[in-house]
Amino acid sequence: MTEVLAPHPMLACVAQLGALLDDAATMQPVYLSTEEKGAAMRELARLETRVTALRLRVMAVADDTAEATGARDVAAWWSHATLSESDAARADERLARSLDRSRPQLADALAVGRCSVAQARVIAQVLDELPGEVGADIIDKAESALVGYAADFRPSQLRRLGRRILHVVAPEVADDQEARKLADLERHADRKTCLSLRPLGDGTTRLSGVLPDAQASRLKTYLEAFTSPRQAPVGEPQAPDDRMPYSRRVGQAFCSLLEHLDPGKLPDHGGDATTVIVTVTLDELRAELGKAALLDGAEGQLTAGEARRLACTARILPAVLGSRSEILDLGMGTRLFTAGQRKALRLRDQRCRAEGCTIPPTWCEAHHVEPWHRGGPTDLDNGILLCSHHHHRAHDTRYTGDRLPNGDVRFVRRT
Image (cartoon, rainbow, N blue to C red; front, side):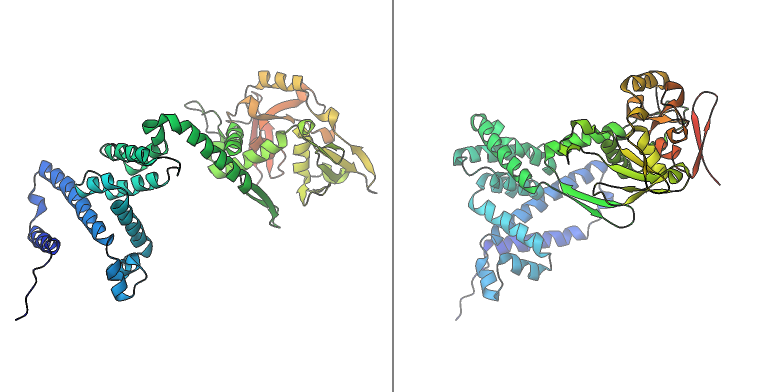
């Protein structure tokens, strides 16, 4: 007579859980009181965690199950058997083995529902990422501290706390480890630093690159000086830049930053401070529509209007050519407003003088009301402050700029 073996107690427990869930499925939660619904959801979440912890305990010792079916590993077997995503199955297997082999405190907390599965994943990852030089006793202290934090902090918060856990459990070694980590990160950032410029053939160039955090933070600060105008007072019109998508404002800020760099402080390039020379004929310079070419190895062309705008403030040399391409004028030192004149303009204008614009004076450019290529002098009476956005409008032939009685400029698109 064949002896019938009793099922393993764990299987009996699983069967009982299934029976209880069958009973619960026939009940109507709508009749629970408000307090009872909250209590039920909290307890079900804790039970869900405990059931998952039990499954992970089984998964940690289920290599024979995978071998019996020819599966590559437990994660592959689980993914096939439950139709789950392979990435999720492998994450479960990694957590299961970590809990079983080296994280007893975390395993106990998960088993009784004192932390969620998401919290357990974060804690296990934080502990795995601790430096190899850290001793086992310090890792145990870190595990205990993080498990305790799980009672009050979300997974994202635990991750942030985990980055500083050594400062809590072992401050005597934390500074040394952090210094080494920072040195490694800086070397990694230096190796990864790159920048590429690829002309797209449509008048734009795609700029892409990777920068170290410190330099990227500095660049962000510089760009925000251009992209963070003061908010207009209640009742005043909103500045056009405030309605512009942020990514476009950042792109324009980067262009403004390049235009405001002082070539005198840049390394010499070809025997002179880095300079872009723009060639344009006198007729095209005076015309509403025209084009100018870039020299010194720079690719592409720009409109005569853009050349006129750059000539107002940027340290760019316009080489004005006659009908037979002879150079009529090279340079613009006397055409730039001096530092003293710019200060006077800031004191006088107080802001961008485009109607409704509130950009502060320090972020504005000095513009010739009567263009210099038409004989307009570089003096205060012929100068006005315009932000980069409206300075482009002033040199855009699609717009007219009418001076208002209060000195502001009203830009209107031509019809």
